[in-house]
Length: 228
Image (cartoon, rainbow, N blue to C red):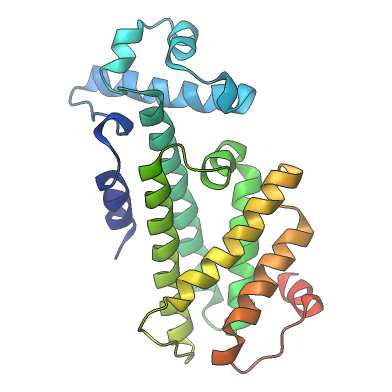
């Protein structure tokens, strides 16, 4: 299942009012992209508390109606941004994995976890939207589908290295991803970024959870060494 499938699935579970209406004409697409870009800037400056369609309209010099044509609610803008950051994060993960082809399972996982944390730290708006809490009930479902999809990728990478994880429920790789993501969320909530200690803890806790299926001894110090 590729990137486009999980993104299509994400849009499919969102309420109509929380989903943007795709523009068809070039001029409309240009306006659409300007709204998304300005929303990103506004969130970087003011966070969710300062975000609104009227504020976007004023900053862009657009009428509110011209924005509502494509984004019926503020949630539609936020979900579009969330979708784009999820897309970018997943693409970056997939880009680095070929270079780790000869690495052990534990080193691969550590590298991917640290790369994911670094993505969040480079993209504070994406971090806010992905780790700070879903903006609607349905977008929470979409984020969980994303975690499930990352679990599928993790399963493929582990199986390519001879590590077999049962296919029947529970979905062990997805749970491992959720464990690491929980460490990220806590660091974001407490420190406003993913600090080094929580990168280590995310990788350590995931490796510990998967240790039953692999031949390795995991310690926090070992995680730090593999991350270097």
